[in-house]
Amino acid sequence: MSELDHSSAKPKPWWQRLPLTVQIIIALVLAVALGIALGAGNPSPSNAALIQNLAIPAELILKALRALATPLILVAVLHTFMTTNIPGTAGRRLAVLLLTNTTVAIIIGLLVANILQPGTWGKLPSPDNPTGSNGNFDPWGLLKDAVPEAVLKPLVDNNVIQLIVIALCFGIVLRGLKSEQIAQGQRGYQSIEDVIAILFDAVIRILNWVIALVPLAVFGIVAKIIAEKGFAPFQSLAAFIVAVLTALCLQGCYYLTRVKFGSWVNPIKFLTGGADAFLTAFSTSSSTVTMPLTFEVLQTKIGLRESSASLGALVGANFNNDGTALYEAMSALYIAQVTEQHLNLGQQLVVVLTSIFASVGAAGIPNAGLVTMTLVFTSVGLRTDYIAVLITVDWFLDRCRTAINVMGDMTVSAVLDGKRPRSQDDEAKFLDHDNG
Image (cartoon, rainbow, N blue to C red; front, side):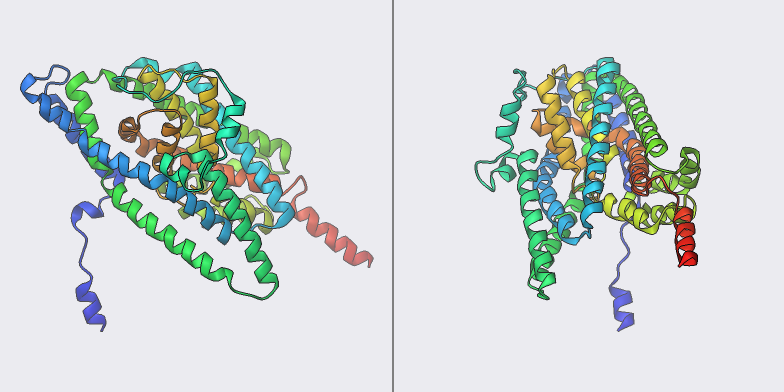
């Protein structure tokens, strides 16, 4: 039997064994070579049809990502609510901390993007049919738009705010029913949880098929832009990288400030003790893979209580995506700048709300930023075609924002641990026992 299993396990082709980052870099090099061969800004009229067709793979792949984004976020939020163990009082405090951190991250990202304006360093072709609105800010309109006209309408319209409202409502209700049935010793909730888990795994598997084709999208859109416009449109990407790194550093400073004034942990000890987790997050580009190490260093090197470490590193990691939310907000503003589209205050608020809601269940999704970015772009009428341009630098920025995500998890754990070290708790218990 084992011999049969061994013979049926065929090795993957060499290109599937390459990491996605390496595939994207190879696609980028080939795209530059093809763009130069086709004219690099001075294309021949005979190559016009070929150049236009280069973007077709990118359009199809990004269209598939946009189609998968809404059902994936819906199922991911339901799956998170059904499978995550969140204690009552500590859970409410955890939710406030996570929401505050994510909101601050997005605001920092938008402020940096508005001040540095990286998109003004180069221009991409403006869309022929932009769907964004430059009307006045209408807060009541945003509130009314959050309530869908029909339950399934947000899935059709790719309206992430309405989608998250529905997902949160169903998630809270299903979690309440699960708690009631557990208290009564029943197991009827298990079938619902299993169905949601199966749906989540199925959508993730389809998503992995699409993600595998992302290098093809990068090749097509980059080759097309270089052939038509040369390298000038990509000059702004360097400014975008600097802007994102600046915003991530500011978010890191905010975390250290919160650790300094909200917990007993020394910020220097926080950085040195968490260095292994930060480096692992940067090298693996996955907060999920880093999660066990994060949980360990919080207890052994920083000295937090096990309950606080588990809430921030294990529970909070399922909801926390600060670095990704910051990046998505900055990406939307950058693409608006580089295509000379103006996002007014109302539209930037929509970006804030969409980024917050989209990050709720995105922590466990592979390449979550790439998936949820389609929802953020759609919410303010930006064309998702340009996401392929951002992928050329995303492989590096993804690692940086993953490290910030892990730092956010650790910050939440430190704040939840309070202002009294674990050793003082042990000493107090000893004195109480001695007096007794």
